[in-house]
Image (cartoon, rainbow, N blue to C red; front, side):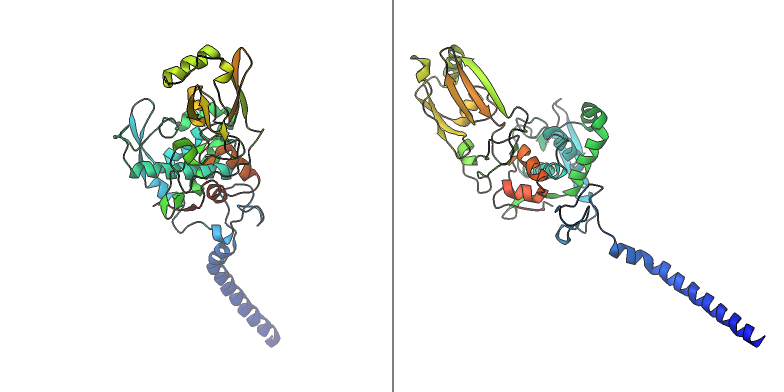
Length: 352
């Protein structure tokens, strides 16, 4: 009996100790789990750096202390729609519509994130300045004036069966860059962007005559994968003459059409810096606008019946190339890598 009582007493003590240990484990388990679990990128496949384990953020890319989404959700944007009405949206809602309108949603997520960050920066610049074109609104939905914008319902209808996937990709792109912008010397930049380059972007001075420290010419990796990367425009002599004289009445186009265009001055990427036309020297951008070319990277030839313009790329060529950003993202670049590549000397930081 005595031996059995000792065993019973020991069993009771073991049971009490186990219960206390179990209680302590339950108490401390949440803290241990939080410290030990990896942080993921909202369900995106792969890590940000491409080499640190699937879905795990590196130490220098951990989310800010402010909960995700609170910066953009807390800032209002007054948008002048293409229909002429002014609506007030959160920055989060507005940027979703800009990214959906400005960049193919099939692009890599880091490219979409770079687009969201550039668009946010451009928007803040517009909010901090004043526009005589639409003083009642911060920004408009016309891409020829500000940035394109599309409502979510319209974008999802356009995407069809891909609506869910594409919408969530843009959600993550906006959330990943919440409140972040492109800064130069601590101030938001004119984060210009365009569709595709012909090997290099263009220095702002070539297009608008003013040098901007962060808008320099850099290599851009896109190429033949870009839809309509190479295009042709054919115009008759009379059409070239009428268009030119309407814009530049001082041009002399009275002689043989084969002599109208002089030798072009070109940049490193093959784009036209300037070219004589009828004795008047025009910039590549002016010729592009005059004859509705997709870019200022072109050659022109006269075959005796018409002028043929062979054009490469699409857009003004200054700032971030969207297809170049996608090519960089495919090669493992983060959105910060993309932005600091295309905007020389800039950095990514909080806008507010």
